[in-house]
Image (cartoon, rainbow, N blue to C red; front, side, top):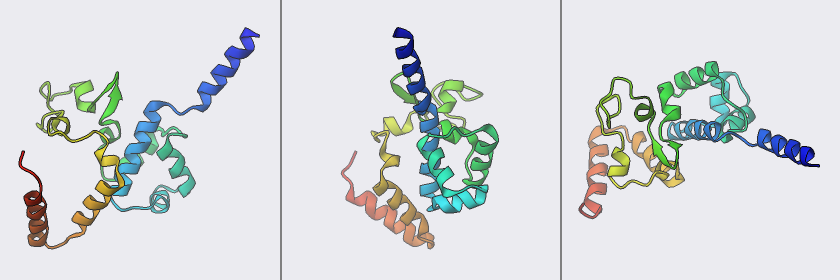
Length: 162
């Protein structure tokens, strides 16, 4: 009886997506959405169906190394993007923080503070919210730099001082 229960629990765990696969998939979805790209368009660029892209984004299907490379090219991000802000032991840390590399401690490889968003009081799930994605996408579609700057200044003027 105990052996049957153990087998059932093991089978259940096998069917649950890994938290890492879920995170990588959510980063694929984030970038795709920021670019205003449909699952169908991403699938076409990769030679996949939109259903396969859907499975990757939910973490149901694991993304292999060569597919991750293809995704980074199509979505125009470094491979490390998919691992940024991955929760590690309760908090979220950037890929650069976990792997140090040549960056100074507490900085990402480009010299910015590693927890700049957290230090600025930005909630960690802000970039996952549809409203934020739509705002960024709309802002990026403004082609005239002068108008984009005026919109930016307007938004800054409407926010309370720090």
